[in-house]
Image (cartoon, rainbow, N blue to C red; front, side, top):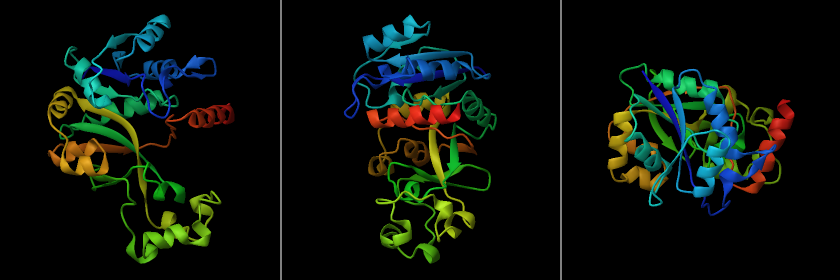
Length: 272
């Protein structure tokens, strides 16, 4: 199967305008993402899909490929679908432009998931090891079946361990788990049984799509659960598509604010 990585990159961002062009260790974010994507073994091409001439020009300047797309797309999925409709590849991988820590192996892994003919999409998950992530609605949680197909994605803690948690209020107000004043690692708390006895997973936002599935999803309107949770992957589940998942041991940090950029810089310094 042939595969392409398409990186949706828009200039306008409420919290961080011009984010793809921000510098990290002397390179723009978009160049970090592009070069890391090029390192994957299972791909045939990488293209940046953008509505911004400055981003387009920057990608071309460092030798990358870019395509100008409509400014009217409500999501990155719609943006990559516009490009996917004009190219001929079996698999399309959506890599976010604000993920400079993306690893080539992660791209290869999501492509391999589509070797299962039942899967329309592939994506990655990672085990949660910090209570802050369990409670954070910006960290999307996932549950899956015995064959590693996603059952549901949610911003709420799932699965909900009734006997141990009693209520979310208990988690938030517990002195041991009060993450607003102290950021404790989950495994270091007195409630470590929550992570050692049960498996909680977060979603890592990289997707592989069969091309026809991506184009079909882009033609559909938002579904009920999708609108409630503001999670596009729920559209696929509500429409009966199967999402195959794989656990990764790599950590990634998306850049949503200038402060996040500093966090990634520290991660890179630590890894050297």
